[in-house]
Length: 212
Image (cartoon, rainbow, N blue to C red):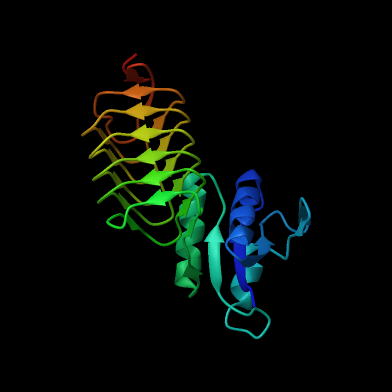
């Protein structure tokens, strides 16, 4: 018997999460706040809004309360995760079978790790993060809650990425670097200096847009 998983957010990111969830043996049900104007995502029906899902919790209508939030925007994902937790839902993590996760790494609930990603020894990934396709999180890195590490990012050892920060596609970050909270690192950047909170930085080497 397969286990049911509610997915909040019906977008491109939601498609990839649904594909992964089904690969892991779940049956999926989508919920999106665009419902009923948006009734389907590909072949999957959308069953209601996030509020509808919350109203169904602890009723006989749903068989379990496992949920994952499939929203790429870090701020919105954080608000939905916190709302669902407050209403008694079980935020689960999904890890693709081709990802390599060290036995000494820690992955918090609500995080999704996609195909080909590597999370090495003693790295810590916080609540509600996205570790996207083929990202490399080296030893002793700390990824704070609701961060998004995009495809093909490489974080060398002991890098810290702050809460709700976004590290763009193909970025490389030197060892021991600290990227603050609510930062945006542009695609293809090379980060060799610390980035303070609330900064947008890009380039090789990456420079803050406030200092360019």
